[in-house]
Image (spheres, rainbow over the protein chains, first blue to last red):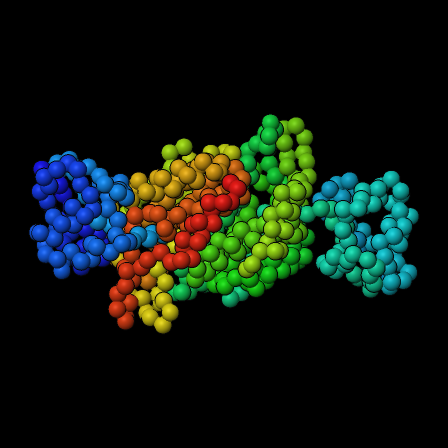
Length: 85
Length: 85
Length: 156
Length: 156
């Protein structure tokens, strides 16, 4: 199945990429697995910014701290530290 | 010498008086003396509202807590409890 | 740097005062905190028909200037505007406006709230509530004094 | 009772939002506290050329709605409006507006400051400062987090 991966703000700039589709084999997913799939597609160097501890992952616009499941068509976003106001 | 005495808000209503002139003999003055002079002119009942502890006296727009001096033409005001905002 | 204090029977325009405050604050302004107090149409079970506001011309302005001077000692402020109406006001009318501009959000918020808390207890105004069940002169409440006193021990 | 949250590239009119807030709050409104954040023209020794604001459509609105829901649990509020701009903003431009209407002054003030403190740390926005000495993505500061956390232990 296919998910949509989004990159925001500094990550978008550093990866030079706003969004991409990604094939995942399993509905079960976690951060490490997801990063491995992305590394396979984009290369180790390019995904380096995603490895920072302060980068959050949101699945369908909800922050996921541990493991998560995805379904085809889901939106998985990488979010650098936020600040509004 | 003559001073101007002002009454504000509830005091103005209760005394039915906004301002009056008052002859004082001495530049030294205090609350008790002032009230006595007013009582002589207005009567004991009418000045009763001025005796309340929460009524402040301002001489030339500055609150005076104890004794004060006055000069001819000075403005002496009786102020009930204030609240703005 | 000269703050504005106006006592007037006329209504005020929030938009105009805000624009003037921005103008006076200059290009380093990052934060504007404001407050407007209005006449509520009821108090408890009573309908409010109006609010009558009295002041002591000269002394009232002075009492507000003192509050602003104290606020400026505690916080880094660019401009402050206080407009306070007097006379007879109808329900839903604007009574008071405080606008505070600063480089920084915490200063603007703290100073705006401080000024309002001191206006309640230290500014020379008298307010009479005109109600369907009788008129009443309003006094600062225990809560008003407590809010004012809460600033005394706080670090600035 | 439905609060308003708008994310938009367009500028906002303080006067219009204030008028709409009063309208929605109704005749028992006694207090309106507001805050506007603006782009400062310098930061330290650097000149600021602009501010670039990005958001995550849908998630950002949700993150603000959560903040407002939490504020409504703590305080008695009549209406809240949050307008937050995105896109590229020039120095002195308005960034964010929070307007809070309540019957009572303490509630309006506290909720307005609470919403701003949480917008800084919990709302899904990213800000890049465009400066004469290089661009920089802004992070919440230790002070921002401290201000947010100060609400946790406080009685509401």
